[in-house]
Amino acid sequence: MKNRSAILAAALGIAALGATGFSAPTPPPVAPSASVQPMALRAPDSAFTDATSAQGAVSCQRPAPDNRVSTTLHCYGPDQLRSFYGLGPLASSNDGAGQTIVLVDAYGTPTGANDLSFFASTYGGPTPNFSAVYPLGQPNYTNPTGNGVGQSGPNSAAGWAGEASLDIEWAYAMAPKAHIVLVATPPAETQGVQGLPNLMKAIDWAVGAYPSGTVFSMSFGTDEQAFGGAAAAQFAKFDQTFQRGLAKGDTFFSSAGDNGSTGVTRSHRQTTVGSTPEVSYPNVSPYVTSVGGTQVMSGWQWAPTQDMPFLASGARNPAYWSWTSGGSSENVWNESFEGIGTGGGLSTVYARPSYQSTVSGVVGAQRGVPDVAFNAAVNGGVLTYETYFPTLYGGPRWGVYGGTSAASPQFAAITAIGNQQRAAAGKGPIGFLNPVIYGASFDKSAAFNDIVPHTYGTTPSGVLQNNRIWDLGSDGFVTPDPVPGYPTTSGYDLTTGWGAQTLPDTSANWWRRSSPLPHVRRSCPSRRGRRIVGAD
Picture 1 (tube, rainbow, N blue to C red):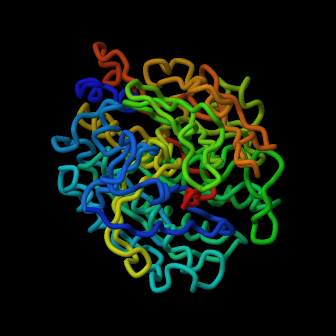
Picture 2: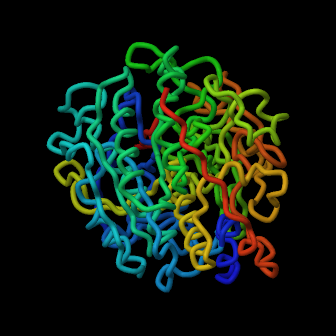
C-alpha cells in the first residue's frame, strides 16, 4: 500500500523530524486489583477453531504450530502492519540498525529470547539483537499464578509475561535491526502502589546504561487517583528520571491505557471505579509522549447490524461481528464487545505544559493525553508467540493481542527508525518529541493521519467517535458507560492526540533539513490489563 522510499523520508513522520493445530488454554488476566498493571489485552481462544471446522470466511489464521483460524476476529502479522504504516518487507529490512529500544515490564518473561527467535524465523526476519536485564534482581517465576503473596507478587507473573512478549516481538516487527532490551523488575510494595517505584528505578538505571538516543516504551500505568494527595510530590520525584533521559537525547513513550476515560479511585485494593474521567501515570507525565489507540481495518471493514456481541449460548452473534472484505481505514480504538478503548483525557495533577499552549482550546489549563496514536485494537490485533509457563498453558501457542501496549512499543520502534535516519544524515537523535509535534511550525498534516469519526454498519456502537466505554447489559446489548469520554475531532483531540502516521511529500526531504531537536535541561533535585472475555 505504501512504499519503502517514502518511509526513508518520513517513518511515521518521525524520521521526517530527523531523518495442526492444538488447543492451549488462554492465559488468565492480571488480577484487576493490581495497582500497576500491564496494558495488554489478549483475545480468547474461543474465537478460534480448527481450519476444517470453520464456517464462513477466515479473518485470522495463527501460524504453525497452532494453525487455528477465526471467522470473527481479525489479526495482523508484521508485514501487514509494516505495509499499512509504510515500511517495506520484514525479511529485507535494515530498520533500526544502530539504535536501542528499551522495553520496561514487571517480571518480564522467562522465554523472551527463544520466543522472539521463533517469531523472527516464522516471518523471515533478521536475526534478533535482544537482551534481557534485571537491574534490581531476577524476578521469581516459580509460582506464576495463584500462589504469590500480595497484589503484585508472583501471582501476577503470567499476565506480565504476555505483556513482555508483545512488547519484545512487536518492537522487533517494526525495527528488527535495533538492539531490543527488556528491562524487567520484581515488584515492590512501597509508596502504596505496588511495583511502580521499582519500575522507575529500573528506568533510571537504564538511562545511565544505554546510549544517547535510546527510545523507551512503558506499557503499564497506575491511575492518578491511586496516589491520592501524594500524587504531585511522588510524580515529581519519578519525573526526574525522565528529565535526566531527555537531557541526553532519549525519548520516552507510554501507553495511554485501555479503559477509555474510566479509572479506579484510591480505595481498598484500589478496585473502585471512579465516577469521573481519569488518566494514568506515567503516560500523563509532561516529559513522556503518550500513545493512544487506533483500530486499523486493512483489507476488511466492520459491518455490525445489532449491538449484541454474544448470543445467549455464549457464541458470537454474527449480526455484531459481521464484516466485509476490502477497504482500508483507521479510526479511534473503541471496542464495545468488551468495553475497551483508548485512554485519554485531562490530568488532575499536572498543569498544561508550555508546549501544549497550541491546543489550549482542547486541554484548557491541564496536561492532556494522548499525544499520538497507533493501532491498538483486539479485532485487528497482532500475532504474538509464547512458550512461557507450559505447566499452566501447555505447548507453544500464538495469541492475538491488542491494547495501547501494542501501540507504544511499535511507535517507539518507528521513532528508532527516525533516529537511524537522522544519524545517517549526521544529525543527533530526536530526543524530546513533544515540543516539536505541538509546535506551530510543525506540519501535522504531513506527519500524521488525523483520526476523525467513522461509522461502520448500522448500530450505535458502530459510530466510532469518542473513547466512552460501552457496558454489556443484562439483556446482552451494549450501552454507553456513565463516565463520559472525549470526542474524536479534526486536529488534536483527547483520544488519538495528533493522530497516527501518514506519509508526507518526500520530494523536499524536509526531515533532512530539520534543525536539531531540543533536549531538556535536567532539573535540580531540591488499564488495567486483562484478558478479553466472552464465550470462553
